[in-house]
Image 1: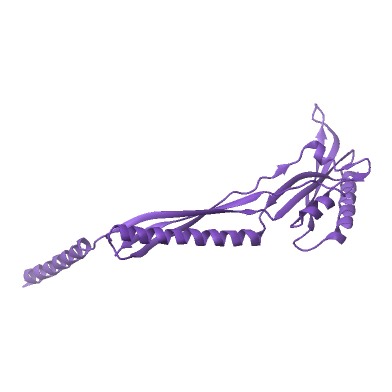
Image 2: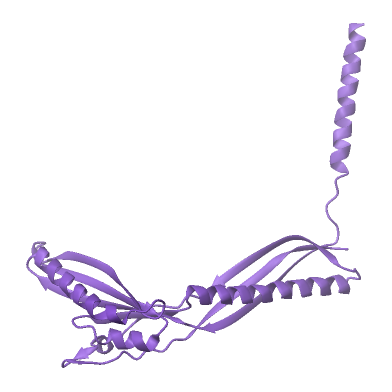
Length: 237
């Protein structure tokens, strides 16, 4: 009797295993699956300018150098504040540091300090004019780019173009293969940006104040480009 019960249990277990294997083997992979991609790109005029002004001073005592640099930055900020306008011309302090200078024997012989001031915004003319009027500071670099709002708008437009291109290609493939339409299985959206390079200015251009006569900095922006690719897989039906 005991052997009979054991045999029944084994038979039931084998039966369950057989059903499980049958269920696994009957699971079919999706048929008529096509992988494809579509891309779109567009350029837009750069609408944001960032100019870095820099003052470099040397001295025998670090605290004296720090005090002098702070005075230069405070005077520059005081001069620029009346010109401030949100999104058009904005100003804030940048890098600030003091480092020792060594002789060939490794002994400290002095101190060198550097202070940066950043002017940025959409009004290129005002920014160039302001940068050329700051005393005791020279233009170190200028960088053009798209503003946050401009980039978001450009990405939205390019993304819509890429998605529309993907849908049109999918529908055309379904038609070419003799199907009425398709079902989306998987999709990925990828964005490739080309950031604008930081342009260091030549030494002659950095000397924006000569002989006590301030002069505006000539600045001209370019274009930024956004490239978006939509890729994925569809099932023809």
